[in-house]
Length: 341
Image (cartoon, rainbow, N blue to C red; front, side):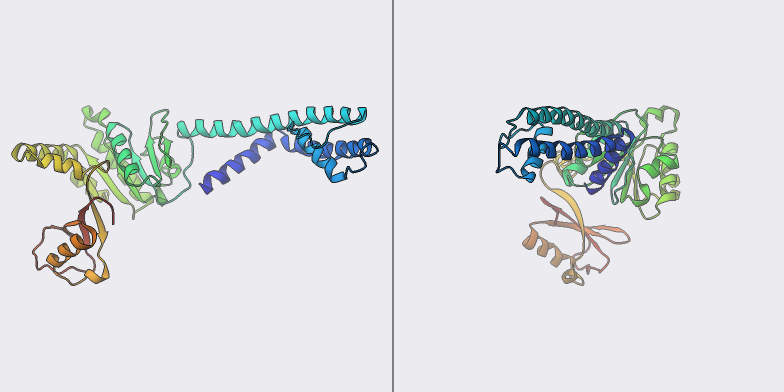
């Protein structure tokens, strides 16, 4: 929000400078001082209680056409001065209002066309826009409405309804596009497969290029990539992708679970969405839990948080480990809960 405010002020300064409105504002202030002084000398003989500060106040409310009526001209000279002040005020404030409005309209157009540069840090970037990207965006917003999310795609325009969501237009394999999206300071990047070119077998190849470009700017970023062909997984690993999601494989396995166990698919749907029910979360182990058996951790989470511990993640994922497994300092707890702990 601070960045947006400062950017708006800078844009307003440039707009005022280009339109010579600074000169017009200075002329308006000088005119206000001169006409207020003239009003004071014209009206003070008929109104001995009138002070010069009152004349300045009258001049300001007159040129803004507010006209509170606490002071008003009684002499012909004062009324003529009032007419000039109203004309000057209408002109200056009209130009100023138009300049400010044009900035907001220009910013909105740039935002929709993806021409804005991203300046904030620790944001999530979704590369590629399709139906899956929309679902990903909705889930991320549901999880944390205040999270900054940036979409990168080559489509001409994209207007996003959620606050803290932004669009960057451009080719995600090119450095200038990733720099505009501030990839060097991003927290997470999600690369969605471009299924429009999958008929040529090039979707995964494009995704690998994107991952390599991202890794070039930020080797510490959490990089997630959707893979269409399992044979291409080694290429993604060479691109330092942290999480490789083989969508066709996952959907097929969910279908099999649903066929074998009628209610499992419904449970998976609930766990994988933030819109209702309980979800799967992870958190770092607390100091008080280090060294205790897994069975004690399970009971502790149920008692304290009404949450179910599924397992731990360290170098490997251990779901439902042995009950006597001792919790390590480096462990990440994977649990199910209605709310994030």
